[in-house]
Image (tube, rainbow, N blue to C red; front, side, top):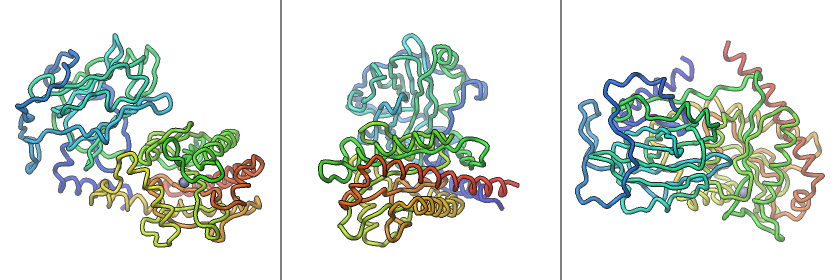
Length: 458
Ligand SMILES: [Zn+2]
């Protein structure tokens, strides 16, 4: 049987066992999926349930209304508990020219999302969510959202309304399960015409019925017919400067290099998306989400860390190994997983059994592609005469490399702890040679990888 058929079969089995997950929209791998347009949904068997007044401000309610029970729901779930908004895992923030919404929830909830005009607004309806006494301003960090309100709009129903600075459309939306559950939206700037075409209450009452679980279509493997799409991930940023030495920060250095490399790759006809373009903090998980949302063919994280002098000098290519036992690798990985804690995100909690099995299956296909990626880059760097670590390809438990279906690599361009490496890293000439070599390594890899992809599809 083909790998993808296995994935679907295992998912179906897993969700049948994990009844709770089947109630929620979506499951498993944590990627965004396209939001169906209203016209794609089946016609409503019932009238649209709600008018759309903006909600009254939330007031702590002494009598919590449980959601109405439904015979179609899987047995064994606690229906009396409301989904609670978890502020530590919730934020509305600007990412590039987009607005990203992340709402951490204590459990899955039936929901729908749509936009309304005059003024432009984003509306989320929920079966019912307990917002507690939290003020909306506490999670609002977007310049594009002028006002944020939430509260109950009737028995068992809640609503969130975000007033937008202009026309945005919902580019992607998902409720990620299993725990920790989160609703995630990506709003992309739109023209007035695009906004008008999509605004309105969806003609469906399906949102409050249990939804059949859906699986992300597996990411289409690149076959050379489109430009290679590379997500560059300059490590660290914002409140996390990374390694620091002699007044230079790793965060600033790798951002400079990423911009130069992006230029070089674009000149070679590749498409580049950056996980950050400025000195801002980006949680590890968001970095992987950017790759997924961008449909990345390959993810390249750029670093220049510090380790004790002697054990670390020269460029090093890191592949994921969650059980890496090597001491230096472990210290490096631990240092980077600290920014999970900074962001209040715990990646370790994601891997329930179903998700774990799925990820393992996807990795079976991706791992050899990763290995070849590392070898291509090593060969390109060596033939450019660039200094590499005595073990140029290593493995470590870097969480940012955990996307199971996107070839991912972390490049330590050099080590800030080494004076010789620092001199190279701060030299524009050296960086240009490095960018050139990486571009050639990626192109070499992509050619072989595309040929194999075409072969496998036949
Ligand atoms: Zn780093």
